[in-house]
Length: 613
Image (cartoon, rainbow, N blue to C red; front, side, top):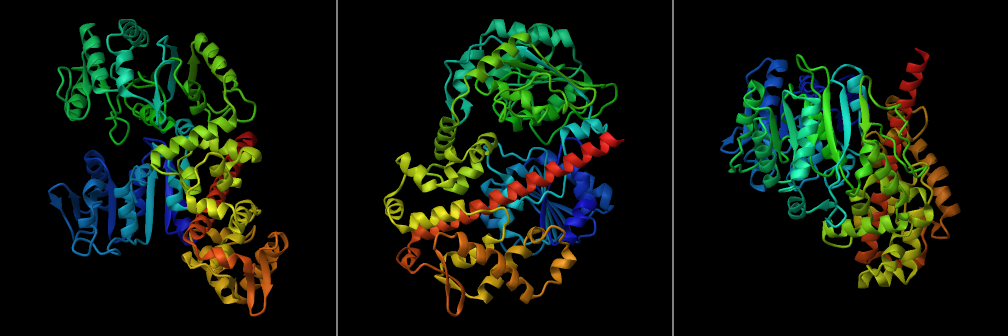
């Protein structure tokens, strides 16, 4: 709460709290919003809304609550718990139900869903004094970057490692089990194996059933969750385990199978001991916890680190008689199999090209990670086959292109690109497509006819200048935004126009911190317009003139002007679109680097404090 209050005191109107599953994010939201009169809590599952309502009742000591979901459309109450599927419809986002400024405080739970169209409509419609996003997994399921929605303002975060070390969650014992299932002939579509081919690989695979059952028996469990790839897979696993004397059920949407069970009924049966295992399909990834679960089994390829950590989190809550969580991960030669090594430590193989198995620095206290020796050989073989970065970037481009169903803009590629590949791309200038995106598209034959015209003229040279101009500081962004002028591009800007753009930029979302090293919010608010203009002219304006390749000029009556030759292109839609895309991308890239730098600094300080103690 202190971090959130401090963030608001510095002018923030939105923020993201990133905390491991089970550490009490909902209670944090309830306490932080206690002094606000009207509060909206948005989630995508009924269970989450019901649990949140109970948490808020415990904190606010009031019964003035209502739900906005299904057939229940409560309005006029100070605290509303809303289903995104209901409130996110256009017919409900209007004055008839709620005015845009009705809520003072809005909580978006499971914030990694917030790029979903319905969530986005809610975020765009309402105008709260503060918006709080809650998530255990900041990465979006399809790779989209949720940090952009809150401009990388993360007032508080606690990692899985920290939560376990502080005793908020139980430790885990992870076993990477070698699975000789052959995935080499299976196809990957949009980064995932197809359900049909996985079913053909798993269904009727007696050898694999024996492997899973024997390891379940080896490590033992009173209450376990098994994560499957499909309804048919979950049904078969429940049938196999039940037939071997381990009462089990399958849980999935629209459950109608022989071994299927309603989720709430299955949970009660598991808690009471009537069954021992629930095999599920995407039904326990988030929002619903069974605190007494003492084993989770990963029975399908680990394609997404987000899903992996969500499913791991289902078993990490503290419970009577549970000392630790057993994690059984059945790993074969599927794509991205080696990625699991990084999930517990946060380390990557970007620099050295390989992963050091002896590195245990970031594994939480009382936890251990054990890989079958055959997996160590498999990972080494996969590392040696590591493809060229240029090919990986190209594959990512086409994956994103298929995802968005058109040639992606810089912002779309940045937003959806896998972060590991993005970080490697920007670290290698010659392979970095963002340093000359039009040139990259031209090399792939992806330019439209109007983009080709821009590419062949002076417009491309100016756009490339915007892509490559130094951004150690963020000072140039508001100057470029003044020229862009919300799409009505100017050939020259006055001091007053620069000042307006400058103040709009630095007033927003804590950007004022980047003005000077020791800047405080009070100091920022005391800066006069004259002082702002002096800094604008001596810093970004000066450097754009010096290093702007002749595109930025002095002009009588103006603070800064563009080369007259650009007049022929700045009125075109394609130029405006490219200019906007570059500015948005460079700004978000800067925010990301700023956030990563601050997070790294915080971790270093915490490490130093531990070392001293």
